[in-house]
Amino acid sequence: MQKIHPLFILIILLWLFPEKLFSQKDKTGEIIILGVVHNENENRNAQIMLPILKEINPDIILSETDTLSGYFKSDYSIIKPPLWYQVFRKIGFAKQMLPEAEVLYLFRKKKKEVIIYPFDIAIEKRNNYVKKQNKFKKNLIQDLNKLNNEGLIPEAFHPQQKLLITYTQYLYEITQQGYVEINRTVVTDSIRDMMHLEYNYLPALLDTASMLKKYKTEYMESKDYWELRNKKMAENILFFMQKHPGKRILIITGLLHKYILIDLLKPAQKNNSFYLYDCCNR
Image 1 (cartoon, rainbow, N blue to C red):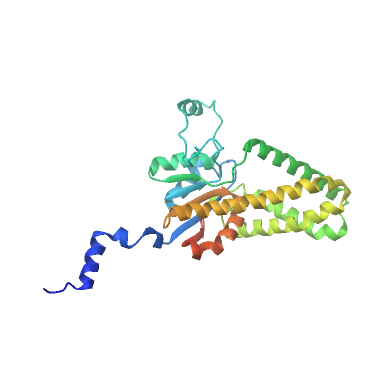
Image 2 (cartoon, rainbow, N blue to C red; image 1 turned 90 degrees about the horizontal axis):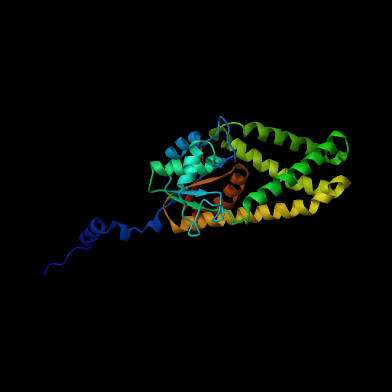
């Protein structure tokens, strides 16, 4: 009896069971990060963001929220807004969703098979947490500006203070623009430089200026929690990438998180088989 050539057997197996021979784990996935601002204006809203999502055409979207937010169930599946909300939203009686939340539902209408997960650390009473953080930052900035206007910042800190003001003004102006503009590499790099400057400058100033010493403990706690939160975000992204190898994953996150996630995810590309892309700079 004539033996069957091994190459012939391989060809038949490739034709019958390609998905078995080439597991999805061997495929290289993609992670694309879209930075957003958590409000809307004439340049930034869900309708403007939607074409960007259509162009990227992700298999999976990871949203900067958690299972306690009200948008997701405990199994990470996104909820459908109740009928009463949909009706009240149309007539203007219900609070408007943030653009990055609303666009999830708009895109899912276009691509029903898209998978949507939350990837942020679970924050109890998130709205209260955000309000507390904003109040703290507002009070710190007010006293910092007062100190600056009265010429009471020690001379040794003048260059850092001047540069921080320049960065802050730049960030405010750029975030009034559209999603393509705020996702330029130069913006991401500028935010990275600004945050590095702040983390080196402010703790030293809070130790030196008597008017600001009351902020030191809370500032350092907030900084540590921010770093922990971003590390957990990156871990969650890698978890979903490993759960869905070879897929195109879009990360929608606040602009201040973007540079940190890039820095944390970039070294993990090779071991986790994915390419990392900066949205709008692919």
